[in-house]
Length: 93
Image 1: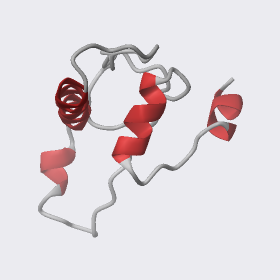
Image 2: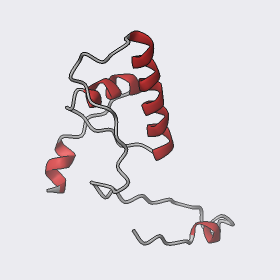
Image 3: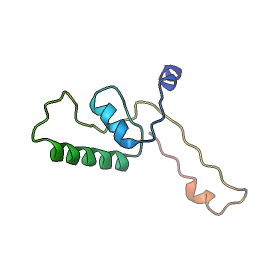
Image 4: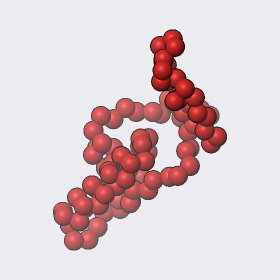
């Protein structure tokens, strides 16, 4: 299952292009929650400024609280780094 999802990943450098695809219902965007909130507000403002009513079949953007795809993240430190004890915190998801 994970490999099939990985094969469909697409790198999009333009967040506005990504939000347009999301609104059309053909795309999902993986980023930090704060950045996704920013994109949601930015898109709502753009829609409000360009039209008085939404005549298209575009959807509102929704930020999921649960991760659909678990992507492990690792951080590397130099040997005897003073920062290592600060990062030795485990989070149970």
